[in-house]
Length: 287
Image 1: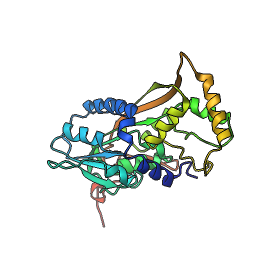
Image 2: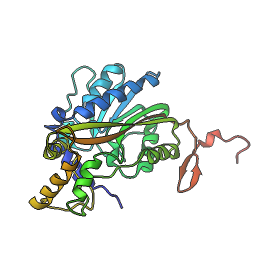
Image 3: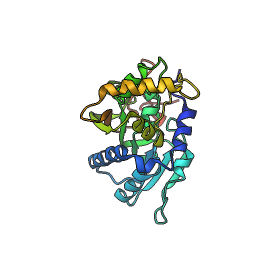
Image 4: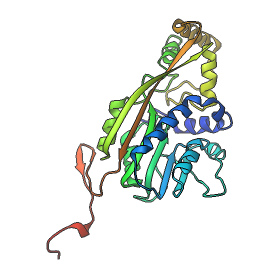
């Protein structure tokens, strides 16, 4: 069962399209670090794909970096794509689609970039298999995602209020790495870093999360409005984290890069090693 509700994810980010840019300071900081990882790719890409592009800030940076390449900005939420400025010289291509079902041909992408998107996709092996499908052999994959320690203070505060899930749970670095290897990606490198933002009151954090679309997408979440008593209990519980006059909000960020496998390199699926190759590659007599 998918722990996330895709319709809620699409709806929340669509509603946040207008307010996202002015509230996404942490996302921009992580994006800048992910852009730096492109130094590990020495090729001259023909096609670059930005998965989960949001309003297109990263796509614009990719276009400046790879001036000769076609840059495709892809997002699940149409209102986000409508905020992307395609430009008039070498305009960005905008595509509304699910990252798990990319509407692109096999081996058609040289660089696949994704900043803080894949934490909303539960089936990482299937996702990375799709990334492998569209990435050319030797192509470059760079992405960031949130780890399970993200917003642990807020999760704990809500747990003091009721037993319903209020903060989405994300995969840990070991799961991410295993899924990359299972998909057959070469030379994966992953690292993790913690960022702490501080707020005067917990309600400010909750409003900011809503303004960037990062609301509760748990499939088992309670529908409807949260009662005032529950909300107050959560706020009071969060006060236990107050230090030096402010409240912390922790983000665990996993950044990774890897290279597309050579044609025919095996991948792990359902406990078996699977390799594909052209019949023309077979040697010996044929009948």
